[in-house]
Amino acid sequence: MGDGGADHEGSCLCGRVRYRIRGPLGHMDHCHCVHCRKSHGAAFATYVEVPWEALDLLSGRDDLRTYEADTGTRRAFCGICGSNILCYVDGDRLVEVTAATFDTPIAERARSHIFVRSKVEWFEIRDEAQQYETSRPYER
Image (cartoon, rainbow, N blue to C red; front, top):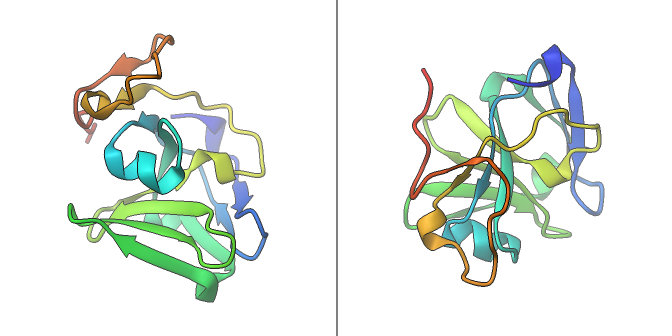
């Protein structure tokens, strides 16, 4: 896992939602699933896994809105500017934070592309990161 335990901060586009992550970051993945593509309006979404207890919402808690997909996955976004901030499933010990909302540098690089079976045809994956048809196996 990357970043050697340094704290990281991030925010939404309008700056109302701000967060801090204490400690090391987990895996970074590019997700090509339909829900991530549509919620981000992009070919894929990039997330960094962190334990829930390492995530502190510094401001904007009341501005966060949540959408639950039919799969049970929830996406929390700023209700003012629409920035996607979090992706999670209730009961999981990890939350995925959108990498593009970090305000501090991230040393971590994506280790995998997940749900490539849903990848848009107009985007070609050219890096060396591992590819998975669905989710990657989680390390316990």
